[in-house]
Length: 381
Image (cartoon, rainbow, N blue to C red; front, side, top):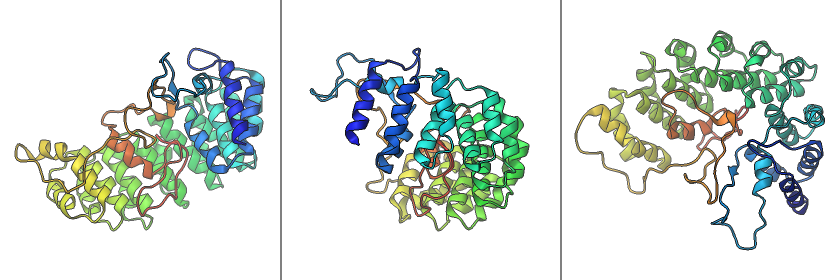
């Protein structure tokens, strides 16, 4: 099967594609989906994560590549192209109900970057199958299709939690403030998954008036919910937010404390300086100490001139890319960002993106601490 995927890449490379060029045609899309359906689930998921997030190859010398490596950069670029072939679009639509969740997600992701019409997406969001409704919501979020806002808002009340949670995630990706009232209602949903995605989406609007809806989630029994709430509140910057986040610094879960540190640094909350310094020296979790150390410059700005706080041994700040690789990326290319990975508002720094990997966002983020990997909805961002 690895050989089949390798041959697929070579065949796509021969056809070009990528930014400014046509996307894959129906034959290539069919080959891709068939190969993914028969490969190891982990490999399928890794490929699905990376589609649309490749590095564009513009380095003729291909420095940093092995001497005998085939040139498959064109294949990777082509899969980032916009699919316009009507037969390919129809094939992607037909795959949204696949029993293989990974193939379904890849099809929906490609559909989001295709020329599919808003009417087709709207009808898919009303489909009788919850699986297809969820896939259509994912496609709408990946493509940031603003014209689907109304159907997505209606899906927040879906009887199935999958489509409802994915609709909330998609609305957060689209970032239309007109969706906020619907998300404020959804944050009180009986479904934990819907509440999680709705709280995350409200944070994307960076509006303090929504803090009252998210503050109660800091007391939720689920640590992923508490960490998501902390991150969202840090983006809102409301008057009551600082004190609540200072309280979250003593949370028993490592991921929640990390999220609170990051959020408080973004808020320039003066009352947080002493407890963050205490965590820097004494927190049992190395990642929490590292987060405190990486925020030392912000603490210096808030507290005024003075000596920098001591760093715990080994707590060296480090930058990581959205997918966890060292910043700077592989040699021989520049980053091609998938639309769902863009962060348009002020204050969306790298540490926030790192924190958000514990919560909903494109590429099905996974928690880094005791919070585990549960609750992820849609892709990151």
